[in-house]
Amino acid sequence: MKFYEGTISETYFFPSIVQVNKDDTISYGKFDNNTAKCIKQNITKGKKPKLILPEVPKKERYPVKPNDISILSFNKFQSNQINKIVSIEENRLHKSLRKDERKKLIYKLSTQTHDINHMKLLYQRYVDETRARNRKQYNEWKIKVDRIDDNYRAKVHGWKQKCCELKSDYEKELRKWEKPTSNKKYQIYRYFKIASFSKHYEWNMDIDPITVSIWYITYVLFQIYKVVDKSATVQMGIPQSISDVSHSKLQIKNAERIFYSAYRLYSSYEDEKEFLNAKVSQLLERTKCEFIEPDYNIEPGLLVLPEAFASLITLTKEGKINRGLSLLMDIGGGSTDISLFNVINRGRNTLPNISHILSIHKGLNHLFKSYFDDHDVESIEDVRILFQRGQNGFSKYVDQFCKDIAKDIQESIYSPLIEASQHSGINSYKVKDALQGRPVIYTGGGGVFDILIRRIHVFTDPMSISKDFISLKNITNKNLTDIELSILSVSYGLSVAQIKEPEMTPLKNLFDHIKIILGEKNNYEHGITDVE
Image: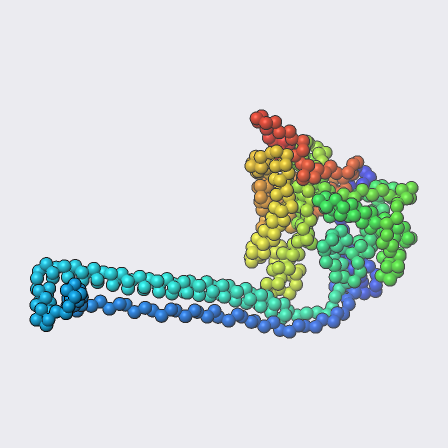
């Protein structure tokens, strides 16, 4: 596919794939397992996973249940009370009563009405108190028993949860173990660009990513110089971060090193045929991964742009986005690039002002890998096909993917944005209100799937790329689908000639232009003074 701006600048779209062929030559922009060189690997299948579950929790023993205090009959209680009274009387007289005196006193106490009624009251009090003591000691025992039961239920619940987690992990590992493994490793290189510019991307191929990037760009140069003069300045997009200034500068230097190394490799071959016939060993020998100041008399100029900026040009050039802060989500295969940008003056040829670029090393392939690990699917490619067909069962993985992305946005963009407003003396609630309803625009391969198009924090107006959203006048192929437009938004943006570097306002300085006057009503606009 080809884009052009005016009559000079042209760019082509080639998939970022480099393949070492069986004859040790290189192919670009496509892959074919039938022609790709295969390296045998010594793969040893590990031991079959075992399911080891924790022991069932043991229940603590109950305390001994207390016996109820027996309640005496009235006659027995009365007899005991009379004996006590007799003993009291003897103590008062300081002598023991004679047998007849004792018998007479007992008879009197047992027969007189007022004594009997009093005895009944005493007996009822005794019964009530005894029953209360029985209830108290039972309740104390029951509390201890209930506490033991609650603790045991909690332990069993935790044990069941742990068993479920272990079973899930075991089944996942077992599926991996049972899947057929191949000792073949095809020399097909993808995501070498991300690996070349990221500090965190893990690269496990035998040829380093910068070398592969140089070869790929060399091939691209052979294509574009068929139709473009070699003196034309080249615009090159990279996954550049602006939050880490020192790393950003290193990324630009790295881009210059890669491009000019590629240009010099291009210049070392007579023509494209000779380059494509070159063996890997020769290419490795000729490729010089070093930075040498370019000689602009014979070498082209280079403008390195953040890919996010290039993608934004596609959106803002025709004035389709209202003024104010917006969010761009470029979901690719290997990463998700997020940009916070500001459109200050709406209209044609409007350029965005970027405040933050965040690159997260989780893309569609991460989502597919999560699904692949949990299901009986032969390959990631099969998962991709199922996803594109709208297969059920992806919701859990998409939800987790979006949750992870939203968390990164919260930590790296939204929270610092609110903090920056507070440092400028602006009420954070007013900032949140001003940002409500701002757009989040989805591009890239993941930007065409409805299941991924979601609100992000206060950016509650999700959009995706379509023919109605961007201008098509500079695209020679007028039959591009919305999917192709979304994927090619960066390439299209790079085809627009830039006369200056993109404007960037770091998050911490985003509100510096706003003056807060005590007691005066602030003139708020969407995006904070940027939208009426």
